[in-house]
Amino acid sequence: MEKQEGVVGKKIKKGTFAGGAKGDAMISAKALSSVGDGEQLKKEYYENGQLKVAITIKDGKPAGPVKYYYANGQLEKEGIYEDGAPNGPVKEYYENGQLRSAITIKDGKPTGPVKYYHANGQLEKEGVYEDGIPVGEVKEYYENGQLKSAITFKNEDPDGPFQYYHANGQLEKEGVYEDGKLAGLFKEYHANGQLRSAIIIKDGKPTGPVKSYYANGQLEKEEVCESGIPVGEVKEYYENGQLRSAIASKNGNLDGPFQYYYANGQLEKEGVYKNGNPDGPIKEYHANGQLRSAITIKNGNPDGPFQYYHANGQLEKEGVYKDGIPIGAVKEYYENGQLKSAVDIKNGIPEGPFQYYHANGQLEKGGVYKDGKLEGPFKEYHANGQLKVAITVKDGIPEGPFQYYHANGQLEKEGFYEDGAPNAPVKEYDENGELKA
Image (cartoon, rainbow, N blue to C red; front, side):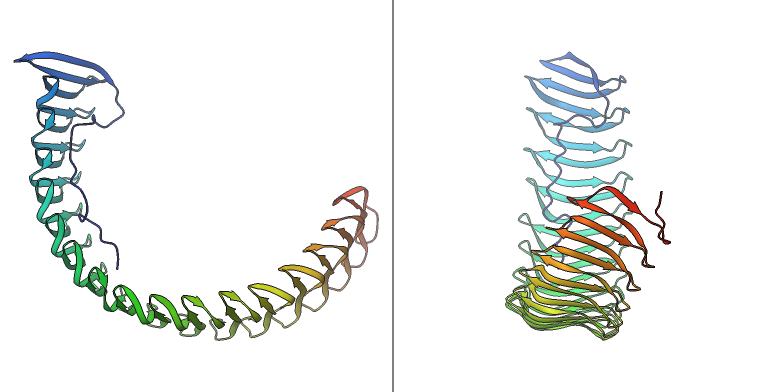
């Protein structure tokens, strides 16, 4: 269920005269003149000479008519002050001259009819206030004049039937408030008029069957709630009507078997949840139905043998997890079934001899890992089997003589590494074995 928006919980705009008119124009002049009977008229002006504010002062407090103006000369606010506080009708205007709000202030609080308007002149909001609290029906409108919401208030809280509408006039939400909380049947609709959701609310929480729908009318989700908590199986669907997921829940947690599906109806993932976490064997599938992965979850982490597969059914990766970390030999394969890499893992990092292979089965590179870093002789090969690189590595940094070779077997480059950087001289050769200038 979506959070309710609109007039619910919104406070009335006071429209006081605490601030000046909007705009970047600076005040260039002030004037104070006596108007008799102990009263003075205070005026302020913009730099362009336009009047900004006119206030009557009595005994050091605003008293009588008060007016604020925009720099373009348009009236911004007007009202009456008594003993330094607004009292009676107060009006605000947009810079284009349109009425923005019309309220009546009594004892510092909005009282009586209240109206707000959009800048285009359309009514934005209307209602009745008593001592600053809305009573009866309050309505809001879009700039196009369409009704946006209609809510009844009682004792400051929403109480009774309410409706929200889309800008095109279609009903968006409807239901009933009791003492400020949703109660009974609550419905939501798409802008095209299709039902979006239907929920029974009790004590402010969804209770019983809960269903939501796509704009095309297809079921999107269905479940059963008790005091706002899903119980039993929760199902979700694609817009084409295919089942998207089916998950068991218990006491507000995912608990029991689950299945996820592709939009074409093929199974995507299956397993079991226990207290909100996957537990036991988990399988994933490609959209064509081929197995994608098979792992076991224990205490929230992968544990035991694992396999990943290419979409053509060929094994992609295999190894063993312990407490979420790969241990021992981890092997990867190409889609054609050829071995791609073989690396030993210890304490989560590579350790010991390793080999990588080209897709044609030829060795690509080989060496030794020590504490996750290359150590000792390291060699790379071209796809045709010819040696490509021969270097020595110490603590992960190249050190000592190095040779690079062209794919035809001819020496390409030779030199000496010191602290990972070539130390002159470095000799380079073309594919014919000729030394480059």
